[in-house]
Length: 262
Image (cartoon, rainbow, N blue to C red; front, side, top):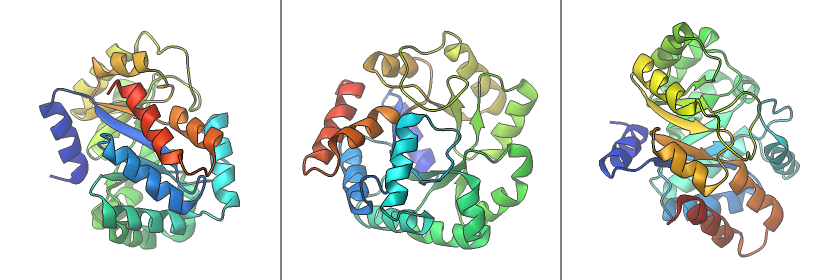
């Protein structure tokens, strides 16, 4: 079983939802990103998403857009993100998922990317803007490097397409809880539970819910019906508000524990 599969299996055996935090790699700096991943792993992260900064992040809300801008300004690119992953893997076994737009991968070259990501200890890749229908070569190349492709499902995804998403995805399907971009929200859509149950039934895969999970009550709600919960903007906001201060890692850990109720 892969590290991602083991992470979900371990959470299920402990009768809890898998905690999947998201960080923009390179914000506020590559070295601090390593510290933040280690802090999150230390407070119970089952899988960590490393966002690859991109100049045109269409799927991201304002908080993550600003984080990408800061990371790009610090010189962080896909190669640097893989170096961050290498250092994390040297120090910690937590599974790593790269959350990227397809352009940086294409620019590096898919074969080169797969080789380097595998060598860095990356476990999976989610290319947010690559349609599942156009990803056969990409999936094949990732598989050759031992990397799991992860695809998204949305509230508007039809059952016929959900089947394709499930067949293409590795250890789980990422369910976008609402149409639109990432960001903090007041409440989750009422239909989220029914949609997750439908996705699980059609795909046969674990389902993690993301986009808008920013409060303790959101985590509790998602934990009642999903296999994983993705928390991004709420943590990225802490990075934005704290900057490169010495207590950044402890603040991230405190926020994570607040959201998880631990």
